[in-house]
Length: 377
Image 1 (cartoon, rainbow, N blue to C red):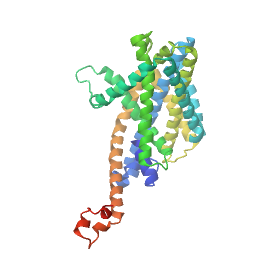
Image 2: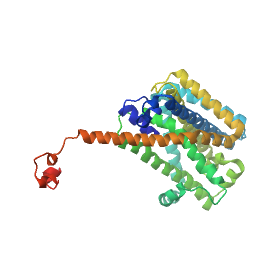
Image 3: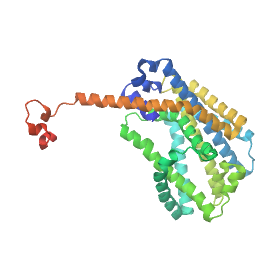
Image 4: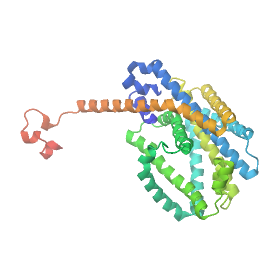
């Protein structure tokens, strides 16, 4: 939603590459005043804490993988060292530009992820995966509305808070920088192409990813060696991936690949976040200065370190929810603003369209009714 609104107002209407500029239809000149600046500040805060949360969670999962392979132990000190390394890497990638570092890392992690999925499909419970995909898709479509409105009114809400609310907030905190970044690379696309590329294709890839990874884990618990639930209970969710891979051949190699994959996933997300924060703090400049990008990258890494030390996973979750809640209102405003702009463009197009022959004065009643093929065409 954020990407579509900004892309439309930036490339179609010639506005600046800022989230506040997309509010022009409903705010008018106020979009470039204090209200507009407040909107951009909310986007910056959400992006900063969304990036920090990602770095913190990524560091925890990499730490679990290292402990699984080499028995390094799991500690805040190791996680902080991992955050420092990832921060340096994503800053270097961000400074190198979209067409070099970010694109290279994104392409590389997609190829590695695909190879890992192919490995599990070939050596894992293939038939079970296909059955899981079909049945889970049916559950998804049938339960989407009811699960979307679930509030845990008749339970303690612990699961809802740790899963649904947290991920909802984390994804919203990613919305500003993912939206602005997608805008950055979507010039020349139609709205139909944009929606297909941003919603349908990634959703399809996500369905496949969860089917293969989640289906393999479910098969292990139901019919195989099991032990994943026990490992998560004792050591945390971050170790689940490596426990699963440990049940198949070449576990050391696939676990090493998984560590590298997790690192690249979070680095490629964080470098985009640093670039976008640079853009938002540089009046929407498509090419922010390297120094500004470096500054935001350092702040994101420092925020991740502080949150991890002060509150661990709970601190990361809380920061995401606090940062995302106000930006949810901004996203609702973007929906309304884009709707107004599209309706206005539709009305302008109708006003400029030449009248058909059937609507011109002096034509017969039958032609005016639109029943004659020539007139109807």
